[in-house]
Amino acid sequence: MLSTAPSAPAPAPAPVAAPAPVAEQVPSDRWRGGLEWPAVVWITFLHLGLFAAPFCFTWKGLLVALFLCWVTGSLGICLGFHRLLTHGSFETYRPLRYLFAVLGTLGGEGPPLMWVAAHRKHHRFSDDEGDPHSPRHGTWWSHMLWMLPRRGSHYWAELYRHYTPDLLKDPFMRILNRTFLWWHLLLAVGLFACGWLVWDVATGVSFLVYGMFVRLVYVLHVTWFVNSASHIWGYQTYPTGDDSRNLWWVGLLAYGEGWHNNHHAMQRVAQHGHRWWELDLTYGVIVLMERLGLAWNVVRKPRELPVRPG
Image (cartoon, rainbow, N blue to C red; front, side):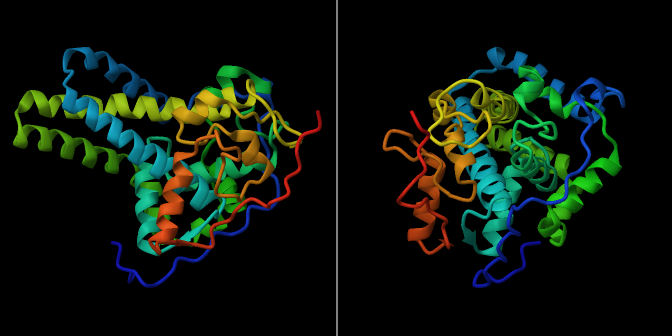
């Protein structure tokens, strides 16, 4: 599947400019089409799986969960989906680009086309009427409810056409769009088999519950907090004209994504933490990749920055 030679660099993503807007349901009509049942069932299933966690705890299972949180959350969602595919904050080899896309898919928030399209639209209409998940339409709406109304395949097709034309040209990204659940099933089987074959059945069950349910619920909520909490609480360093905030605890839990006002001020900049104490673990990985020759054209912040007055 990943047949491209490692020496061939991947094309840079299309600039995230201001594409033609796609009509958004007004808040009063958001539930007019009913529920997006696949999303409802998926999110409910993952949260129900948490109830098994106290009954199959092992330290090995917890370590698996923590490691996979970093792999799928930081490397997959924050680095892969967000800074690489959405904003083109750096370039890398095509096989690594595909690897990060797979890891982001395993973050449980949808395939790359859906995630990138929604996030680019968020920046196009940040905290205005067309924003898919602004807290101005409700805190829980911005956190998770925005994904649950049914909009229909036509809506998503139009969204992809306007906001992800670069990804639509890539056959592998289209494959990920059709095979989202299969990657999770493959990982679940692999986790159980690893724990069972190396240790015992109980360890296999622990690996499954902590590596899938516990890990996915954590990754989902800490990244959703960027959409909700980081547009409600915190401080603004830059005059962005929206509600984006830098929120320390989201910055720590979400591997650097919580320095959200910094990001809204300079969307393509790879480094989200701009002050010495704004820890950004995801950017640290990008710097390491650059030093190893695995990343280049890293977009860095200018030396003179527009600081918010007062």
